[in-house]
Image 1 (spheres, rainbow over the protein chains, first blue to last red):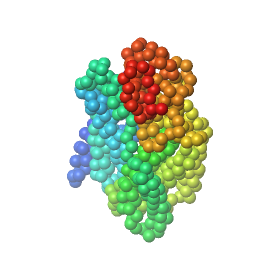
Image 2 (tube, each protein chain N blue to C red):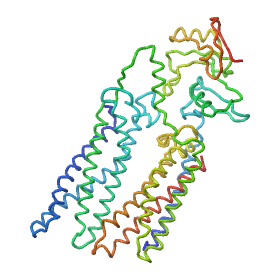
Image 3 (spheres, rainbow over the protein chains, first blue to last red):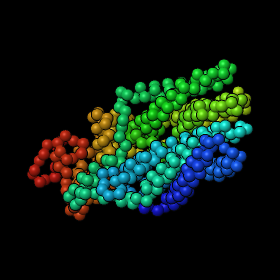
Image 4 (tube, each protein chain N blue to C red):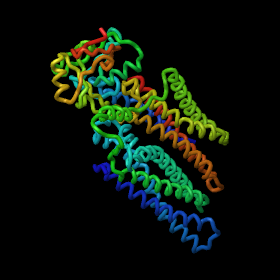
Length: 347
Length: 157
């Protein structure tokens, strides 16, 4: 195990999240089962008491989940100096590839974390949104749904912390089957090639990707603006589904644009398609990534609030919540596109 | 539905966001002395310089990066200059002697090739670092013919 300050911090966060995740799952599932039945006064009080512990634990857990996402990348960045052949986080994620022993699982584990972290933040945020909606009501009519989402959050957290714990604990020592001084130089050259990210989009496809990026993001911005301006007057939710689908589509398009177009341009390295280098070379450009995720997740949270937060008691204020979330999404998308465009102009 | 203060705050946020990349660029400045292929800092004694067109020059941290660059570009450059490791002087790539040895030029790219202006320096390095001279097709940047005379060879010109 590579031990430095970030490793210790990550281990601590991992243990805390695992414990809280298990607590949320255990307490949450019993509260959820009780809440589904028609209860007497004593049982209702029991559900409420468990809910306080659950909501307190879930609040801390949500905060730790959000913090663990950037900490992962700070941890990976701290590992870069451990290997002379590695120059950025991408190289760290390739450590263990093509080896035997436990280190062969390292790339899969860390690549899995790239997906579980944002998913966890999204689910955590959805739970938070539904909880806030439920709190404003008199009798907590959507408690079941809140508990279900918090259970999901707890379960995802357990999975994520186990994966992260495995990655941290597996020794980062590459053991290979081949060896010997005669093959060493050639083997080294072959191995160093794996630390360079591949290029996925060729010159002919670049204009299409640029067009797709701006078309989709501008469509989202105008769609959100139109929904905020027109929907409250007409009281219909016909913009919800297109916005939700647009938000889903925008994820792969924006990520591909970041890797294939933005990173080489901002770094000034036309054949180096590695967004991880932006962390050290142009850290302010990552603001565009953060703002994009804020926008994209806000669309998802507003959809969740509209779909799962709707009932008689929430009818009076739910539209306001949804509108505020969509406003945050509008800010996220527009500032992300603006920041990215200025970075590309200055590059 | 959205309070006016939110719209004003959003606009203020956009103005701040506009300033962020400008400030970032001013603080960072230009990234000079970096390899045009992978952005690594260039060690002066290993520098390779490719003149693509008059006035357009790219610098690289090692021979491997320069070769990757030429392969991707697909265009023949006007000239290629490499650096003699003994003196630090720049020389034409076709005039240089190349040695592959156990000493890495660049640990990230895995390049183990060294450049020398004088045959004696190349031979000395090859003997001391478990290396051998690169001849014929093995020499970087050139389309080569193999020779076996054992004399110092520079081919392709």
